[in-house]
Image (tube, rainbow, N blue to C red; front, side, top):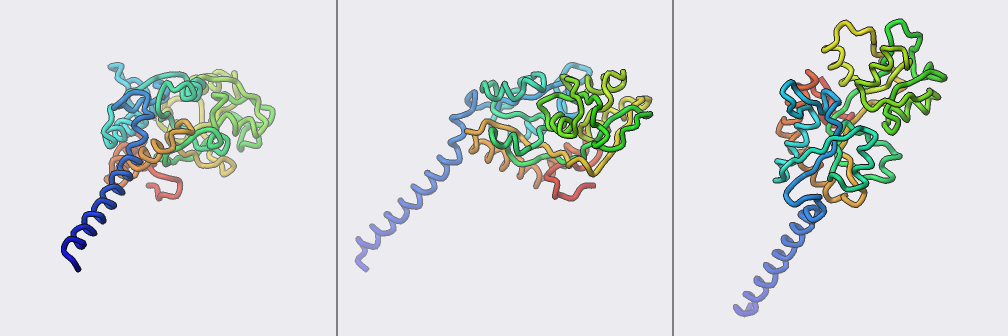
Length: 269
């Protein structure tokens, strides 16, 4: 082959590959222009929902969701910024672009997936019915006609409503437990991991948790605006790396004393 022709072909081929790499990188980085603030991952959460996000004795924001979001942001080369709000305002805040993503033990439901994008699941736990120790409620079917203390827009609130319970609005998990304990509500549905931490901190509580096959497992995934699918992919990619290197497992054991990281199909301790 003519040397000039051969060289031209090599240059042309190299150029095509180079363009492909640049195009691929540009596509991967396209989410950055959609971030609320350049170089930052702005995260919406409650800040009052232990052990997911809450204040320690010094007033510092801590929790499983907080540390997962920090690790994800670091993996993506972004600075984590947290915006605290009540649960029932979280979705509205996402709609108003007050943050890029919600990390708040959010369950991925079919209804939510119609309007929002989700990253990969980063926590899996069983759902439970929490009632007073002398309650006659044994399964979710017994919720019919009973009062259930719930954040009305949560998947637990929807599950209680589906089982014909009368919803008593509660801004958060702690308030829901207070309503049940005081007799102003008969039950509340929530994640076993959150209940386990509460019970550990309140050993003399007059409440108990009922595990039942009538409730689906509770999984948590980062929730984003529907338009931010590329950002959701990048967050999932970061979470996958953190799962692979053991970071998520370490954080889960730190906050829950067992490995609840990953999806419902992952093997748990």
